[in-house]
Length: 267
Image 1 (cartoon, rainbow, N blue to C red):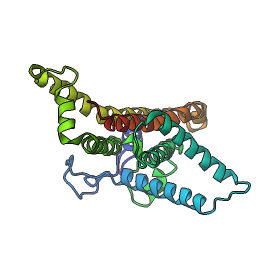
Image 2: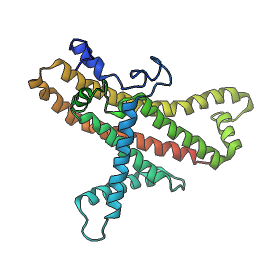
Image 3: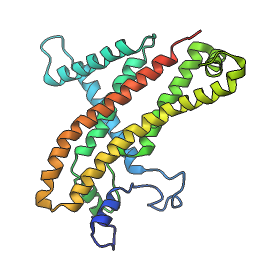
């Protein structure tokens, strides 16, 4: 595909598929504005989130103590898998952690899976309907991944203050790793940088891996003839299934670890 009036070239094809449907592209915000919203990323992330909630709720309502169906077995395996990892990693007491971990793992996994949808399967019909741009992988958008990471960051701060108290949290930043008043400026610099690095690395890791995977699929579609694309896309898609799963798992596990650290009341 190419933008209206633009010749179809590999460069324009790649550029087109890497462009989000944002409010500035629709003339609803100034070009490059900080307040520009990526409509496609938000739409697919919310749609996938509601789909996940509906599916799990319907399974829970139809759950039986007798011989379970395949879908119930799959959901129960997921729940047990997440619950086991939470029990092994999280050492505090908080009923929110297990549901949060399950939501993070499944939601990110489903958003990542959108990368396996053929490149033009959704954007081409959307363009026929007058929608100029359409990116369908929310986790390939740094705004989505960093927003999720910031949500984890706010939970870290909230539970750190709730468990340790505001004074305890401040002392943890000021008196670690060197418990001496003269070292407070150095401790604050070290701890604040370490604290801020957690959400940034959490969001950027997920974005980087998913964006790179998306670029590979786009390059295959742009540079190979249609009859040879499956030779490149199929092996990469099979390998990418592993990446999709691992990235969802890593985000979930790091969230559990960070929240576990927030619940540790060090003296």
